[in-house]
Image (cartoon, rainbow, N blue to C red; front, side, top):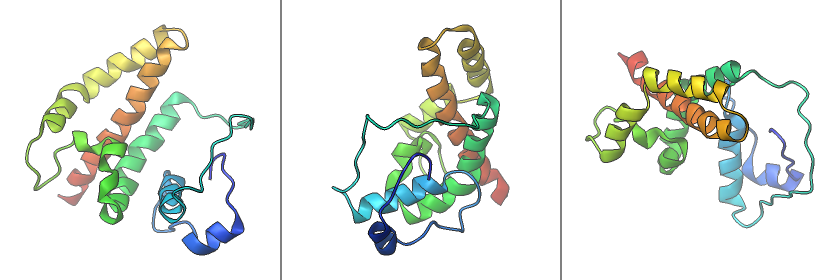
Length: 154
């Protein structure tokens, strides 16, 4: 689990990671399960410093988010449908769902041209302005992957 530590007693209660989740996002699923078991027991410490030794390129990270949206998000939503708005997938009209304002927004703002524009702006703008585009690209990659999961079923 990226940059986390968990007490053994919490692991005993929550169980192990879900090995049915392929690839990226296993830690997010586990964190939610931990939070459900210990809603008042998770803490953030701004005093801890974490150093990442193997940083990914933005392209590799976005590929991982797309894969997460395609492979893991459908599995997670089966178990925890209440997480949909936190994953951005409420911007997708899933099969059998009605069109919503958010799904129309998703079709309008989460598409290849918008993502290409965001990538260009990310590269042009200095930090911290570029962060807004990174956040958009991360969410858009998850949504794009989730959309493609419906095509896989066809």
